[in-house]
Image (tube, rainbow, N blue to C red; front, top):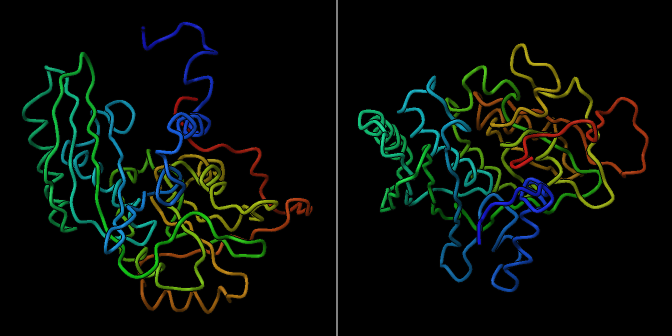
Length: 309
């Protein structure tokens, strides 16, 4: 049976990433546990482990996540940092990783050495042991997939669920223009910030912004609610139009929700004391889906990055 079809309606492109993940959960049936122990959050939580271990996986693919303009060392660093950002989004810290390579036989040894040296430097910085992996030949192209194991930094793991109507929506850093600025590989994963946020009881839910604010925010939005965010509130990288800030992706910032009873100004003061170099913005709130708000962004108009679409 061929794994490919010429009939578009029978291909993964007809579903797109989000519907495909729903289908995969259905196909797996009872072997796929509910989040956070399975598909649906930045990391999976491994049940029955003493410190509640976290597991995540992310690749870098030539032509998709990097090209010839990105130094090989930066590609190796980006691969690990993408996974570290997932851990940060749940308040975790890394422990060990394995790496699978899919290589065209023409892959340059010089390029591969620089890739591994970049990976090693980032692993040393964040105290991650690279403990194994696999190499397979590909007919064309190059892809590296890293599986990262981590653990909770405290008694609480933040997930994407928990927001309520009236809660405040916050984000670290600035958004948009990640490709043009080089931020997509120069970013710093917010591990310290994520661990701090996980210890704050007023934080209800969190994720990292990897596919664009317009798409990722859907995962945090509670039922029968919508985000009320004015365009002026969105922190943009210099020169970025609002659409870029909402849809570009690969920002790797933390998007989180504060309980409605929390004063954002007081929270921001505590944040600045802990992280004076990391900007924090309160974007807006979750409001009832039926409430009219002419000053708020219409998130139905914007779509972040979705694989296979």
